[in-house]
Length: 399
Image 1 (cartoon, rainbow, N blue to C red):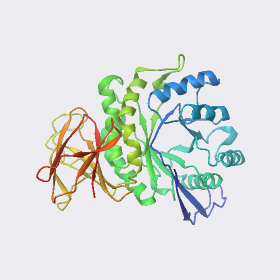
Image 2 (tube, rainbow, N blue to C red; image 1 turned 180 degrees about the horizontal axis):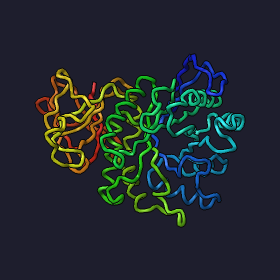
Image 3 (spheres, helix red, strand yellow; image 1 turned 45 degrees about the horizontal axis):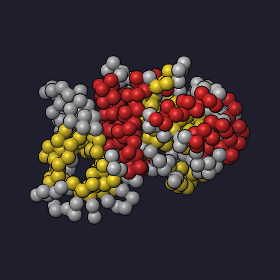
Image 4 (tube, rainbow, N blue to C red; image 1 turned 60 degrees about the vertical axis):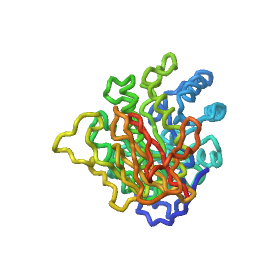
């Protein structure tokens, strides 16, 4: 299911002087998406023959991915349908490049309207400091050619992020474990706020290399930490970067790194349908922390609450009396308040305890195994639950 919104825009001319569309359609994805890809250039590096391509799809499906991104071909989409995968069309290939071959792109997009296997269109993933008008043009064009599927535009960190007029999926990468762990929360705050402001959703490119030997339990936990702290900020999809590290392109079997990512996917995917019912968070709060995300004692110079996160207000519905977490507060599709708790600590579990200001009609937590909501015991207006290492849990307030 897709959500469509009609927006009336007054846009500047394109960088080449071409007038842009003055009316656009925002198309929001209806499913949580975990995408396998071999990059976003003109050649996607997937096998060229259907038999080997299908072998890859079986590996991808088993690893708990929900989609692939590739250059378009009818037979590829047919095989994705066979194996229950969505197809993200990369509109940066010569035959239908979104701005270098506009007629080709238009013809393809128009032909894919209402195709249930198509997730949507990848338009751009790069620095965007000077090309926002071109990206607005591309989004407008793709939305007008096919108003039934969303578009994806990704940036480096926050370069140009706020300059788009009406994105569908607003994405980014910072690869924070390798390029600076301090980048995680500032960028999450920026994209969460921007997505809420523009009624968009945000995704991340997540690098499968976490600089912790890049295999094994530590690697899995670092990747999971990035995913869960992002989900607390409203993340609705992940493009894992990059397939060449997750799959051996000689045998077309998953590597050890790919098997690690499969375990991360297995942990977060059951929460996906519920996350899609929540939209963007109303607010994101943090408890004070006594240890770093690497489970080390914090120095005296470190703030109690990791910057730039905000603490819970004094009049909040509950007080966190035990545990260290970043918490996204949402409203679900039935108007209930929900919270996603993400562990601040990558390597140590948290025993969470919440003390509510007033008696409640009940607090439930989503159970991954049964894929159902399970009531938590409320005793003296308090509830307890456990956050696994790097883990995340979804709770809601019953009416």
